[in-house]
Length: 270
Image (cartoon, rainbow, N blue to C red; front, side):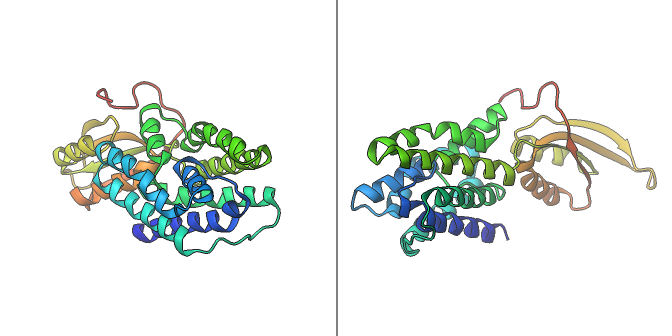
């Protein structure tokens, strides 16, 4: 199911590029936008340029974000690159402003779907996720800020009407990403398990958050239990649930939305 969602999100992104943005020379965010510039101004195919530009950041993501993340991201980058090559460039909307709005929204939807699956579409998404982990900042807003240079390049290479359309596209993309991928929403997890030591070890090693362990007793069984409490972001939930099921499928887990966090949210070593 996760792989299917990543592939679907990647196809959505490629379709938005070739049906809405590229026909009007409207650039997307990040390295995808740079790839589109290569495709418009040189004989280099946009899909090939997208893959080559992403390679160094894939290596960075492997070192900082883990093997699973980078494997899923490679799948996304490959599918997007193939989609850009296979899907024909067709002017789906005649109005450039409408194309910018809807193209940006569709790209944001695709990226949001991918991010929810513990992956990214490559490019500056990887950089944004690294920064967001350290600073706890909404990724869509962060990407919009990082892409100002794409807007300036668009203005100088094409014209400033195109640059303004690119601005619209990037802004809409960022807003849709934040709506779909609510990583900055906090969740409190209370995990009750008989395998407290193993659960604590797995969570400490794999989750970028602090953890508190309490002793408890089952009210019905009268057996000793460990209670683990942690606060995570929405995007980490799928990974944490997978870890919990791996260690103790019988664990009782209560997940609640957190209004506010005070004190240390990240690990001391962060």
